[in-house]
Length: 286
Ligand code: GLN
Image (cartoon, rainbow, N blue to C red; front, side, top):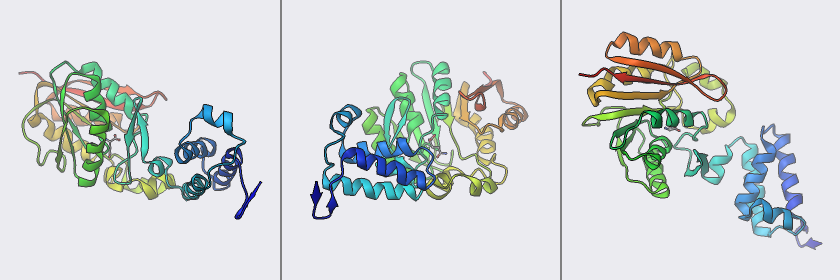
């Protein structure tokens, strides 16, 4: 079969073309990503594909698909191309103003849920896409505020709030700067990568994810220092701080909470790979 522009290719031909093109450009999950872009541009699922893979792909869809394959080959993360990322079993909108939600961060949500009681008031600092707060609000009977220094990030968080279908308030703020009142739990996945390490990360992260969401200053600990120091003024007695950390920051965080003197019940929690990933500590009671 031929069209004016050359051979008409089947969906299978296009999928294989995409996989080959991404592999040739050293894209790690070439097969998965080519499939995600096929599913997105042709608006199909796997069963439709397997029943129709030898049929010609719609010309407009094929053009969109080829364009996105080429953009993915330039190391743009697939989630920014489709505008969608999955977190805790739900779909979130993302763009280059927010960090792409990571599976590791689900450990923070789980630890928060273990400590949450109905009626608590939760604050999520550096909320980005809002994935942490919105998941907690969906899973538990609590109220919540999310803050971020980036107004663009809060626009994404608000899109996600509507998508997930919960109530939440957003405050543009550099950590606690514009936050008022007290909370029962403060959550955060703050920027925690050492500035000098950012240049060594995958091009997907280094060139496309927002550096303000990644850069934790020279030693990576700037945001943790500020949060550990200021959180007691925003927590009710017995309130929790739970934060995601880098795999090698557990002892530093233990030190920060201990030095402060106002916390108890420090815990270090590992992710599915067995690496330190989350810290929780409780403000001492009255
Ligand atoms: N809270 C968001 C997340 O975990 C964004 C974190 C960030 O920007 N550092 O994905």
